[in-house]
Image (tube, rainbow, N blue to C red; front, top):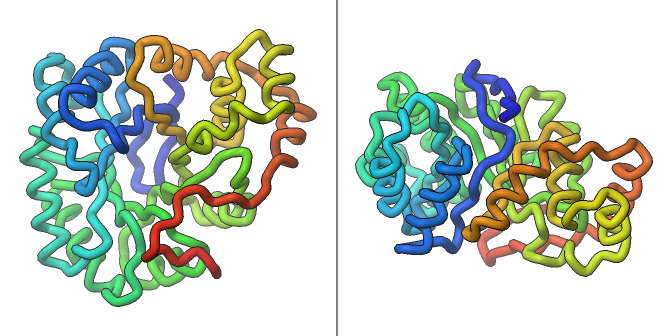
Length: 272
């Protein structure tokens, strides 16, 4: 499993399991199977309501905690200092662990000063309850504000990223500021399977469309966390690491972008 070194000094696996919309028994079984297949990066969030399922799966797997990389997120309505600390402590309890590898602000909230939020993050890092701090769904403007609001190095910006939303400018900015990009919904909630170009490339490679898309993202040094629950999809996603795209193929996929954002809740602010 290839790993990427974060600005915090810790390393993160480049491919992991996304767990949004996985809850209960389905989540427990998906995480258990993923761990059996060799996944070590598990992504969750307070708002996913599945941290307890994940914690149980990890505990029953018997895997060493030091071999895992756990990411969770604090909710955008709970970004006051005390709320951040309370959410993290609850996540630690639910995930049955002493520390979170990567804690993210799930969404920016213009009504709560970032400085107040990061005071909580800084305390958690100082107490060694959090190893790396990051952000999610932040635009360049949001990142610039965040950098002014904390002494912590921002390790990751987790954003929607797929061939129909190729956020090139944001990727370049993050790369230039030592912030790793983590792609959620990397398959565009299934839209990639309808692309004739992606189908052609997949056929030429003898691969699945999903594998081509993940290979495209991995080639850009992006961390990917596709959601999967079946054995077939979990294995196929891992196998995407073996696919090599040419410069030409990658450029063709770059050109697909329609700037189509699929995840856009009412509270989101995406315009810089």
